[in-house]
Image (cartoon, rainbow, N blue to C red; front, top):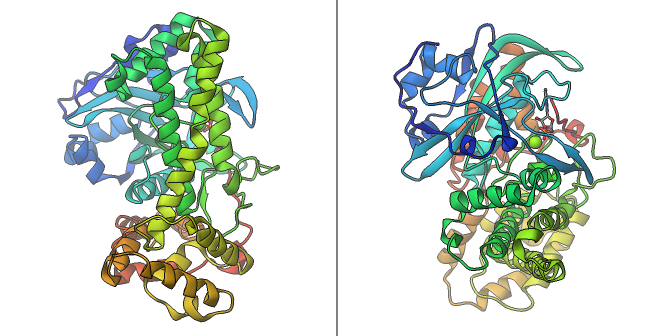
Length: 483
Ligand code: AMP
Ligand code: MG
């Protein structure tokens, strides 16, 4: 390959782990890459020059046809519990180029859809345009909703086709993440490696994400507690925003506490705790209401992998780990309540707040009300929320509750505006954008959507039309993963 002088500033710390943890890759080239989406803000944050990324050499890199300076391309090994069943997985269609060094830390630069790896298990290593654009739109929306997430730097089409149930355009997504270490990476080390491998991975992860713990006496137990804390925060944020991840397998839970894997995810419209979007989630394991429970289940799998590091005495280790994991529920609940109070403009705490919140959710569910829009109506004093049916009594209680705090009306309004998004990536809007891009090569719908989603708490007039609900034909919306 040509040696391109670039703003890439890569290190390869993961490749410094024993090769048990990854496989080195060769490039598998695509026919005619074309850049169709570039996240200029993210590029800037990463210290990457956007002109360079748009250049022919830049696009060759973003498609996996050429390597940026300093790259050692690897596929990461991991395992995972998928729908409760343990299996070997690994990057079957992804390639870690390296970690970009920025003033704020190092970020994985990973290509997704870049070709076959030793972990492809019969798959083609490729990705289709629709799902890669979907990840691009939704992960950026999540970031702007202030929910920790992997991010999307670019999407290129490959000029090749991938065969699924239909023939689809091929594409490569460049994903960035504070790391791609998953619960499943620890499971891989624990099931297929040695105690020493688990220790190597834990030490690497602590160094990368929890540096303050490195000198603690019980650092592995503290590490577990920190991971529990981050998930309790993340999943509360999902619930508060109506986000349904859809495939919370342990390989899709990042140790960093970022949302990862945008396969079958969706945002709910009408409030319905039982909602499931994924076409393969027959029993609703990953329904909206189950997300905290599954978070806890996954953390238990994670804790098991750390037992030999936590204490030499197995019983003692189990007890300590169990206590750490048991912190999830109270932490989650605290985060959820605190977020809900903010959504309702409540600054102080009262014991009865939980009841007030629960009543609102019940009324929403019974009346099939839109989750996002109800909070907007409450924020902006829309009379529909105040006067209609069951809302009336509740609204009185809520108003009385707001009287029992020192803050002014203006302060309440500001808190609510800042806690209730004007827009979320509603499924019908995302589908509409994908259809225009994929079928007609028209990226304007997608770009408008991305633009409007970039400041969800701005409450600007151009966001108003994105509050509209999907047509009734969309009520049975299903998502598909592994695409
Ligand atoms: P996911 O559903 O994206 O979490 O993927 C689950 C596993 O399947 C991971 O090990 C992926 O790398 C792998 N995988 C998904 N799609 C493909 C593909 N087209 N080719 C090879 N492996 C794949
Ligand atoms: Mg995955």
